[in-house]
Length: 101
Image (cartoon, rainbow, N blue to C red; front, side):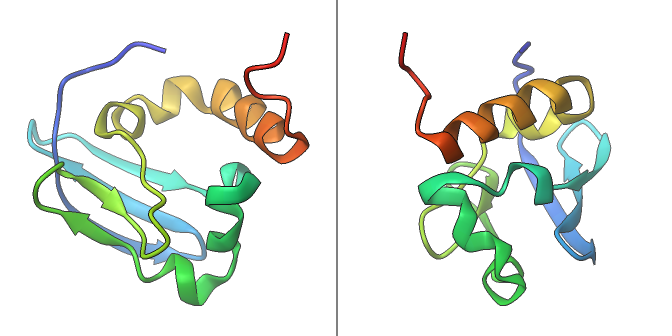
């Protein structure tokens, strides 16, 4: 994953588990989060009421949820290029194998 230095400046809920995210360079991404909502931190966001409590953190310039879940702005920016890898990591979160060798 490449990491572009950026900030999230706004977002809009555009569907179930889908957000349109705007960045400080004018780039916009529509992201379907459902495939990565796994594991201890992210699986609670499968509850749409919880997912839609997303907010923009003004200090870190990224999206955050009440349970502490968040995504690095660079991860959000690079989402289209890294979708398959993000989904693979999410499956590891769910199985508890992240970081094991």
